[in-house]
Length: 360
Image (cartoon, rainbow, N blue to C red; front, side):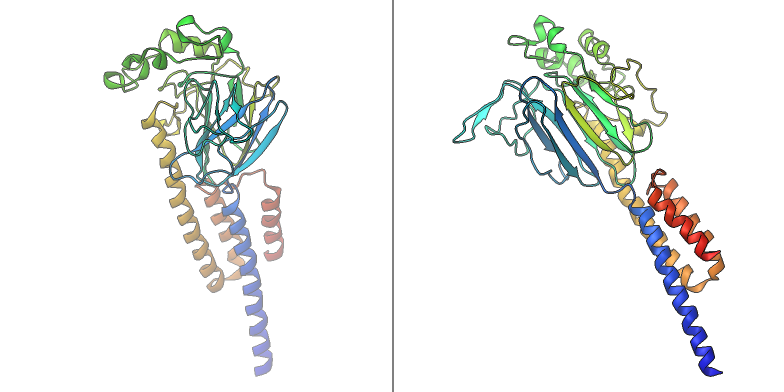
């Protein structure tokens, strides 16, 4: 009799531990879904070579390159970790010595005197693609003309959930650029801030707030040509976009776009929560919102891990028939809070269904 009781206890404990492992796997899948960062693919469809530049913001791990040559028709991909933020741009008219590697670019030069930008920013005017990658929460992205324009560019999310609209500027603004903003023979177009340096154009000094810095005739020209791009520093409402769990394609000189196209001249509606609007390259205050979101995602992950530990304890001590409902409750809570199940994940849903079938 004692032997039978011992064997029964052993079987029950084995059942508890095996199902605990399944629960842990399910919750870890839920937590990890959507926090693996983002892949960026840069494509050059221009009729000429472009030298992309990449700048990772302070506190972000640098990507595999900070600058490289991208011939016509070429592409290159980079994996960014969660909470990465930074910008991409295209340099044009570059000449680099084949022996020393030293040289400069006519537009978008980063003053590094070499192909790699090594942490240096683009010299205006330059079209910028700016990103803040979330960690299980929304990514923020935009294409900014706040520092001027040098070539057409669009950003297209691949996969993900949420709005996930493409953005950018397909219009050749160099052909429409006013004489007072034009660089050399039309190779780039300055912003009014860069051309004149006035506080009302630069949103500085007494004009350093959304209430006092308004669109100028020049920024409105940019906005008319490229409705989804930042035209001045406080152009947040119609210029910042969000997506969760996506990869991104950055295309120079795009010849065509997907259905969610930057050709759509209807700007998206302003978000109700001001914390979800992004920043133009000239707006340091609003950009801090992006870093606040990244910080909140860190604490959200901490909460997720706490709930995971709680689930393990309850799984061990409570009635096994109660556990499937509890685990699914935890998973759905994580999904709604910060961990983002990314509902399209068939793999995770498969494990949820398997859990229910095995336990009920």
